[in-house]
Picture 1: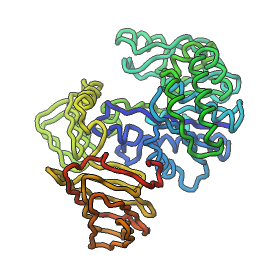
Picture 2: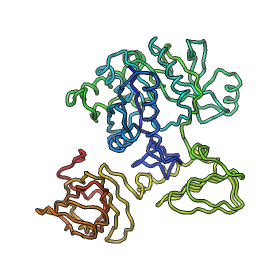
Picture 3: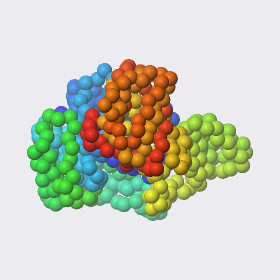
Length: 481
């Protein structure tokens, strides 16, 4: 049996302002309208089908805050399929070794020590699915022989932004790993390319659940012990058959924060690399996103509406507005409703410094978009000022907000599409399109969409304090109380 394990946790700070903590890199939409996580799920399902393993399970390790978004992406990626999704939810990020160790415990307990884990990153892109399937099939042979298999991408140039793997003797269709190399200088990268024995380190893996736990115990005993303690604590409150497993915060915080490369792959003598050429990209910067778009005759590229006048080598991505450039060269312009990035293409890696500045200043733009995704739908801040805030709220069919109360603000709700079921104090009422209701401060209230169409309403908040943390939850379908 093969179990795809999806690691979905990176913030993607180099892809700001589209990638933010509230909706990070795996969820950003590419030019084709699909997210990287959606593509990863679809890729995993295609592997299961191509290799003839029948109905399989997809295990996702992600942050608790991303559970409902991830669940929606999985449902969209496999319409009509029957590959159940299991989610292990981290209270905070602890790098890849703890995540993989806990995933291995789950796979071992549920499917046995010889079940093979295919560990995939949620924010990578693979263009050639057929070649990917063939590489995975060959990797399975090595994994069955108790090898820890990593996937080495055949380099297309002396890239200094990736780590490298040096390959040695042949092992079936793979090769034995001689060593892992950190991101090199340009001169060293060129020498690696010339030798023909070096590959980019993709950060994808294939191994038996029992074998990776044995190797962790041998080479990273603190990780192994911490993960085992965390697993036992988890199982005290949950069952192995549960589709959502919440990792307990205290024991998880004690597991060393370390990557699987440092913990095991660079130390074990059982590591093999599969040379791979399936159109891989880690979409690590806006330059990588730019390469997915067809250029015009002046090498300009655009996602959205753009006009280029006397401009060359420029990339524009705009969600809602027309962007025009005049007399510019080698720029990246990323426009979102509440933030604009203008950067030289050679400085694509430095976009993360913007996020660092925003965090230091405690500016919400590092974390939230103007449109914020919630388990029940979305809200968009349309306008705000001293003592007021106006939102557009969209609630999915059958969904509801928590039963809640605000100390400092009152709310006026106007329904513009659909039907709302509202609890307002002791009353339960229905509010139709073009009707409204008023929620005084201090009143318990709940908004629900009882219909089959999206509920859209405008909320006008008034009060001395309008922060999102002025919420007291009494009941919630999504475990946020």
